[in-house]
Amino acid sequence: MFATILRDVDGHGGLAPMRCLDGRVLIALDGSEHFCSRKISCPHCSTRKRADGDVEHFHTFLGATLVASGHKTVVPLPPEFVRPQDGAAKQGCETAAAKRWLARLGPAYAWLKPVYPGDDLYARQPMALQATGGSFLLVCKPSSHKTLAEYLTGVEMDSLSETKGRGPDKRVYRYRWMSGVPLRDGDDALTVNWLEVEISKPGAAKPTGSMCGRPFRCKSEIRSDGR
Ligand SMILES: [Zn+2]
Image (cartoon, rainbow, N blue to C red; front, side, top):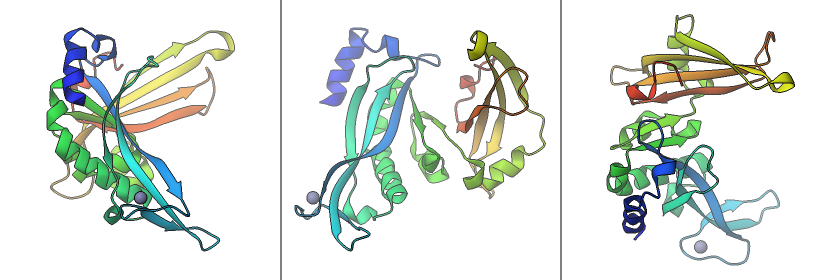
């Protein structure tokens, strides 16, 4: 049903404002809890023990949402529910659900030319390989990607700096990027494209904020102007 409606919406030009990066769309994957109780439960509940010894029963799901930068409107796609056998660890059960979502629905939405943005926990090789029919744009913390971080240490990268804003809001954005970086150790490591953004006040020695590097697969997403 979701796919049929989405085709209709796209057929009437409804998705045009959400297209970006050469006609792609962003499908954000993120876990969310939608039920929690200490009294009511069902056979499909996940459980966790609280500090007071009581057991909490809860349900979580992986939401897949079509999003676009600068747009308040989002389009929900079918969710994937977390199962009790996915375990109690938040990260483990969320990535298990994400893998199922990509295997079950990834091919059905490949026509959208999706890019999957996500947290660092998704920036793992099995997850990346699962993202068939799409690209991905994932936060990639150096602390959880040591091989990749070592690979980038001391190398000369392409870069671009630009200043945005006025007066006290003026900021310098420094982009650096590199293609063909190994996501992990080993001969079978997937190579990804790395992009990092540093935001600082003009003249400041240290950045005021930064976005973590993000590997992504599609080389065309790095444009010649670095945006
Ligand atoms: Zn339940």
